[in-house]
Image (cartoon, rainbow, N blue to C red; front, top):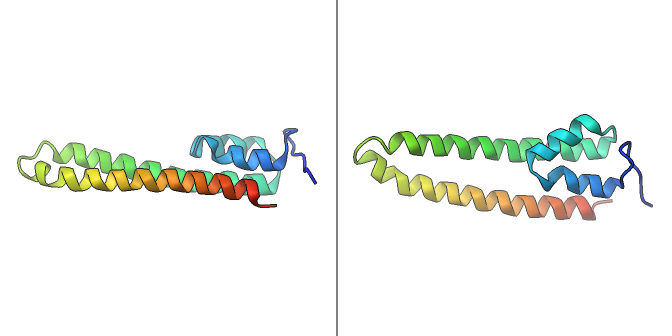
Length: 106
């Protein structure tokens, strides 16, 4: 029932660990693990949280650059801040959901 992986841990635990630190843990497990199922979760973690991280970073940069422009910075700051907050909540909800699904899936 408990499948062991090439790192000597339970497969279910490694699937959960693939999401534990976002794209960083996915990257680590992708290179260290040989189990196909664990590597798939690692890739999913890298793609999901990596793209969300890049998107949030780009929006933060845009918000910072636009802040220097009079009136335009003030007008866009609230909207971009709201977008960043929404992306942050999407990231947290996805993180929890993917960890639960990685644990439950056989």
